[in-house]
Structures are given as C-alpha cells and as structure tokens.
Image 1 (cartoon, rainbow, N blue to C red):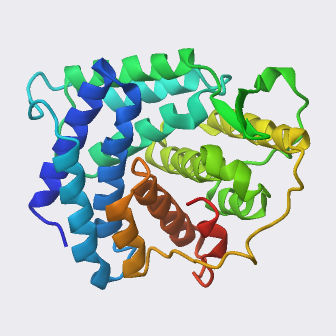
Image 2: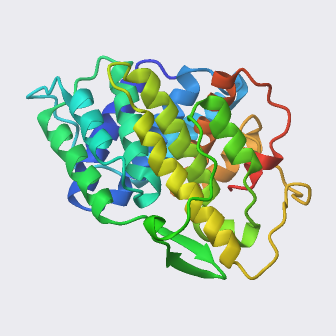
Length: 296
C-alpha cells in the first residue's frame, strides 16, 4: 500500500499536467493514469494481493514518461477548483474531445480535495489552457466502417433517452449500449463513456457548491453520436459479450501483468478505476467482468 510515496505520484501528476499543456495535451493521459492507480490503492478497490503489481505499473509509468522537472510548489492558487468548475460549466453545450476536459479536471480536482498538495498558479494556467484546447479540438472521431470520421453532434437527431447521470445510470448506459468489437477497437468509445460519465458523477459530489447537471448534456450528445454511428455501420452489430473468450479482470494478476506490457495510453488504469468505483458507489456486487472486457 502506498503511503509516503503517494505524494510523490500526485506531485508527479501535477507536473505532467503542466508539461503536457505546453507540449502535447494528450500526454495528460499519463497524469490521470497515475492518479487512477493511487486512487485504486488508497480506496482499496482491488484485493491487497494486487498492490505489488500496481506498484510496478506506477514505477514503470513515471520512468517511461519522465517529467522535465519536479512540481514547484510556489505561488499557491487557492481558487483552482472553483475556477475550473466554472469554466467547465460555461462549456457544457459543447461535445468535445471525448470528454477529456471533464476527465482531466476530475482527476486533478479529486486529488486536490483529498490531499495536502496545493495547487499553483502555473497548474491553474495549464489546466485552463487544456480545457480551451479541448474545446477547440471538436467532438473527436468515431470509427465507422473501418474509418475514423467526425460526426457533428448538432447535425444529428436526438436519439438518446435523457436521464440524470449518477453511478447507476452511467453503469447501465455502459453495460447496455451495444457496439461491435471491430468498431470499439478503433477508438475505445465505450471506455470513454465509462470514464466521462464517472468523472461527471464524481464532480457533482465533490463540488456541492455548483449545480453541475448541465455537464450531463455533453455525455448525452456523445451517446447520440454513437447511436448514429451504429446506423452508419455496414457490418452487423451484435453483442459479443457471450463470445469473449478472455475476461481480463482487475481483481486478477493477469490484468496488471498485461498492463505492464501495454497499458494502452493508461486506459487499463483509468477504466479499472472508473468501473470499480462506480460499482462501489452504486452498491452493486461484482460478479461478471465480460461487459467490462469489451473496452480493452
């Protein structure tokens, strides 16, 4: 179990956010992934027997994606959480970048809310820049008929049923939405439904001073996009849950051993954390990981 080392990884993630805002916004995946792993351990969402393997994944990530410098804790910025939530709320009408603006922000705000690590003005400026970059990037692509295309969410009919996002409705949306494996392997949309929805649910709880139900809008727009993409797909779309011969399970060593080989830009870590945390929040019992297996 990480103890004193926990602050090291959290500060590493803060610095990664700063540096990726200056270079490649998508490298923020590694910051989120490190925070996902520390959360899995601190919240005891995996059996104790998995901790050593998770530690190996943490060490490998920070070594392979090293920062240029350490997080400089100076010029503390006390209003980062309020300012960033305010910015997210202003952008709620947009469906952009597969929800990464909300996902990045959740991981940082969640960490700051449960640690003694202060935010800095540099970190605030970095996060603000990334939110604006995601806004400018558009809705992100979706795989249809083997090609990555962009579907304008405002140019298609509203096909999804609107509901308030909470741990149960996000899990139900994830489990019930049908998407064929050949489409999903192209862009990991189901995984981003899971992580985006989880981020929204948690932000609502962390930020009780704000009414954040408007963040649900972007989630529903993305569901509309995927529903429309299914109609464009020429191959038959059918559930492949029953045909999955391998069930990678974050409660088993094989999951973390595979992540050591290929973490898929840290998605193994973020997906596991979102899924296990939502299960816990919804008060559900884990019994079958075949549906989870679709996103890996």
